[in-house]
Length: 242
Length: 242
DNA sequence: CACTATTGTTGCGAAGTGCAACAATAGTAG
DNA sequence: CTACTATTGTTGCACTTCGCAACAATAGTG
Image (cartoon, rainbow over all chains, first blue to last red; front, top):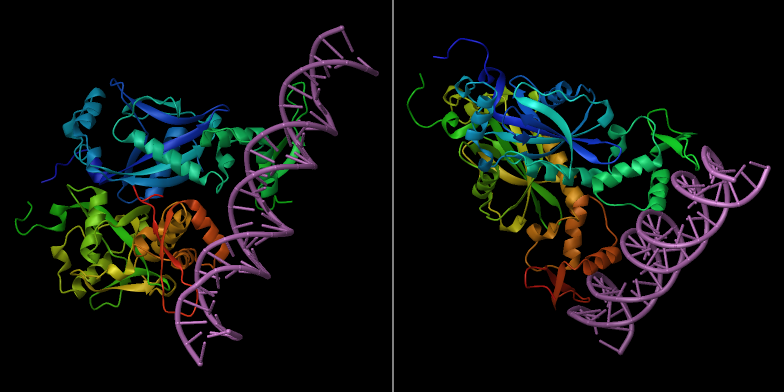
């Protein structure tokens, strides 16, 4: 007989199924990722969560991210589903619960094997106030090339997310979610370079962006520097073209 | 109390989780997909299956496909995980079971909501003997542009699989799994055209393939036609280069 | 041996890219 | 106001790739 009591994981969520998120932000200098640290363990992992029994997968991920970042309308993309048995680390999960002052036995289902749907998100680094959840101490930005060791297969997740993002970098308007409304070509180039991990040619990038038709040129921006002022641009939107 | 009896779905498989496969083959003329038809229903769907409680996701999909096609070493690729609540069609599932002479009540868990990991596979059309499973009448090839109406969200799956395949067409050696060991450039071009759904320029395609370094030229093939005989090629492999 | 169909190859213009250079500022120091 | 510097907008040039068209090289056939 099931025990009656407060709702448990098993009551609310689909068993064996989780999502994890690689949240990308651009600091103006570097590409960064949101990493959480579990209470009293020194263990780091990607933010993730579970899917409600009556919830779309998409919605679950979106909701989870909104809770953690305070942002709505996040650009989300699935990149891979991780289903290896080797991911299964019940001891680690129990230790995380214990370190937060919980009794693992009160969380049936949480120590089972999980299959996780990996997503990546692009967000505006400066608009976020990361909020840790109950199990975690902190949720903080780390440069993609200076990540702490991550639990489970989360390092592989980051690598795969990066590959997927790089593949899509020119298919999608990368800057839309990582830059302010108005930006200079140089700022856009910095974003592309941070994602691709390589320097791009200035003249070629400028030509490509200007001839792509995705940008609208606006007024100049006087930065106060002793040099020519760059134009600022925005991405074309409905009715914004031409 | 759980009833003791023969092992059920719930005992053996992860609940709420499935995979579906878009199996591509090239007939020499057209790109085709394996579609199964359920007993006595006139309903068509993609072949799919479930993941054992102690089985890698990858392994499960591979094993399922091997059973159905008789092939081993199938090139498999994940393209999307479908997690919408709208996929949930318990009545349809019950009807499929009933039409096969089963009592739906004997299959607890099968009528629940499912999240499905979509894969596509490239296989050699001529090497396959499709084998239907217990629930299905037939497993047959259909041209991608002449599919019957499919159950659930399987038509969306096909479309997404096609998009994913097209994206990868030149990143991966598409012909490896869809052509015999040795083939002509023309045959390779036909495969690419079938996948992309458009004619390609003969001279350009030839140049691109020859300069790509992925092909090894072998002897000529005398087809008996009144014209110049084409060379046959194979893909470069370890120790096969140069 | 002429004739036809198909394949291998090449020439040419169009388009895109990296690299280098030039032109046009915007501020600063004198 | 002028010289000077740093940065941005733009252009010229070589190189590559691609579509298109044409030519060269067969392999059969009548």
